[in-house]
Image 1: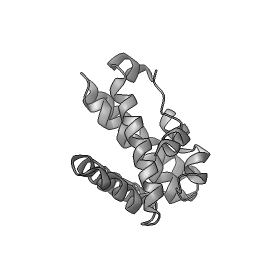
Image 2 (image 1 turned 90 degrees about the vertical axis):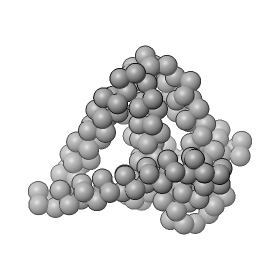
Image 3 (image 1 turned 45 degrees about the vertical axis):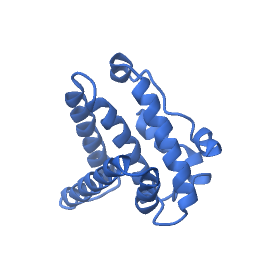
Image 4 (image 1 turned 30 degrees about the vertical axis):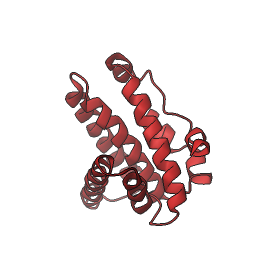
Length: 160
């Protein structure tokens, strides 16, 4: 719920240039999911937690498609496309973290901002780095209980 709530924060769309479209919202949701999954994998027992969160995400996506009226024959194809998007983006984001500072902004520009507005992508990357730093400070108990919070998007954007 925290991930979805954060990805729906209007400031991302109004101030950070994320397209307020189904794809833009999905891409922002994936970015937040990626950050949380990365952190969960680094704690004791985190691989299981990470998998459980990903499974919950997939079930939720499946349910949402069905609620939107997507037919039973089409849902698996859409879920496969979602999975490919998730794995492609997370691989790109993970690689970008091992590269120069500019790489994460470039990856966000390409995958979230439709290849436009590198300045806003820098602000989004600053936000992501701040969020990941906050996640890194959260101990295992806080992560498991969801007793941590994402930073406010404008705080990272205004600091950039």
